[in-house]
Length: 253
Ligand SMILES: Cc1cc2nc3c(=O)[nH]c(=O)nc-3n(C[C@H](O)[C@H](O)[C@H](O)COP(=O)(O)O)c2cc1C
View 1 (cartoon, helix red, strand yellow):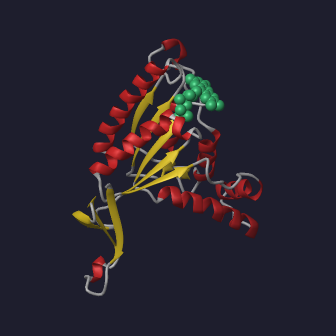
View 2 (cartoon, rainbow, N blue to C red):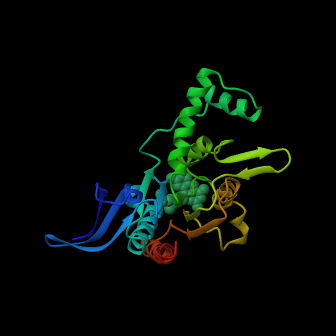
View 3 (cartoon, rainbow, N blue to C red):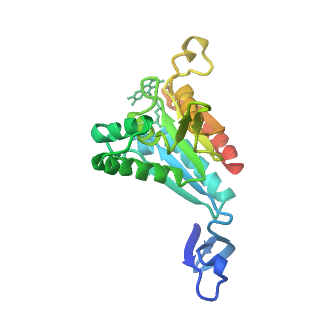
């Protein structure tokens, strides 16, 4: 039997300040639940949001390492919520037409038309979903030296003035996604980090670190999984070393 958790709503007998969600967590043993604890949402629970950027699912090295991270994270934080956002499963709003016009209206300090306001609402909804987490896990393959376009699409939708960052002529740009850690798992077919000649071709890790820093992340931890294209034995070894590193990271995340 596995880990279980139930969400219950505090009833009339509960103190008023506990009248939110309560989670009971424990281990199911045959027909019984061994209760390990009870926590109240909003007081001591966190939400980890996993952004899954590989479409390769069971064959994916980044998802393999992310799953090891999540397994260890759940063991260390049994009451926390973990949400995986598969960027290949859902469509995001296109960033064109009135949506891109709406962004420029904000940048120029101008009002939105009604079409721009409704286009901007769709952007705000995506940002709110992203921003609802307390901690982030990103599993990211290298694609053509950068990142998969589905992740870039999300970045282009959520990296917005007034949402992810602010600007003032006096202080410049300020990231608004603050006080949250991010762990990023980078997979690549080749080997970049140890090879001086090709290191400059890595536009995956430096780009994501720049972007996350721009929107406010100060605590960015990483696991680099490379090379993932090679003999099966070598690749298995690379993946399992990375999975162990990810597990250690998750315990203290
Ligand atoms: C469209 C595409 C482009 C790729 N571009 C690169 C690249 O520029 N450099 C590299 O080392 N590997 C590249 N690869 C290989 C992947 O980075 C590698 O297989 C990685 O393990 C993929 O992560 P995943 O297993 O989690 O999907 C590419 C793979 C695909 C599908």
